[in-house]
Image (tube, rainbow, N blue to C red; front, side, top):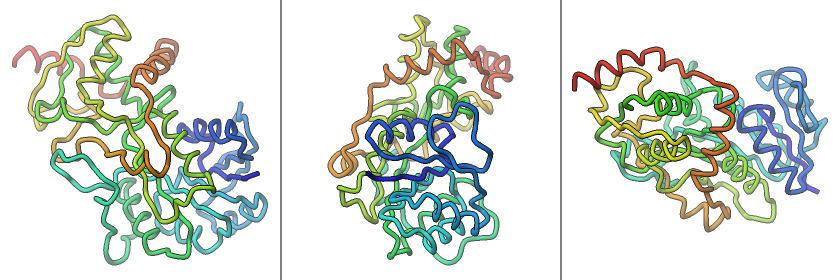
Length: 313
């Protein structure tokens, strides 16, 4: 039986991943900094991965065949894994590594490793780019990368999907970027990303030193909003305007017209066996959570300004 240690296994994507791994018969151990979270359904170890000695102890304790890393965005932590992990596969979950593609769909080869040495301080997106750069240089480490775009689903702490649910629910206009709202958007369902991560842990497949996109296919921001409207029985009052003129928080999924128009899944289908779910299934589950939790996206506090902008246009 394969044994997997899932760093960040009690988080948003981590829970979905652990459930899918266990469904597939993988012995699954979740890990995180804090003590075992209430309700954690799998074996759990608590340690601070920024302390290399604690990482070493956790690897010695669990002896994983697969180390699945959902929590890393510091390249030094990838270096530490390369020094100490002796298992069969390191699965790194990345995001935001593609350059501006001006509306062209992103293929895995569009990421180009960076040059030189990483700076001392890195934000999340640049950290992911540097982590993948370190992996590209780590030829002795059996790594595989999963690349999702923006991920939504129940209990997403970013609440970006709630921003659209709230605006459809209130019946007012939704401000969207005129240049890109009908393009394929970079979106994924949390269950699909858990599924893709579990596929990457299948040691029967030769996935070494390869990256794989995981996302919806053919779903635009317009399609997302219209899907929400169908699910809620509310009208979709879409109000296109220039991206540069959008009020802050009005459309948290963008899409910025400089970025890619979604992800190409050809390699993921052929080699990983990934197939995205239907948008309707993702929205049904997400809407059920939203109706109970009633979360509010921070940008919704500026809703009066958005309505004024739409009314003046």
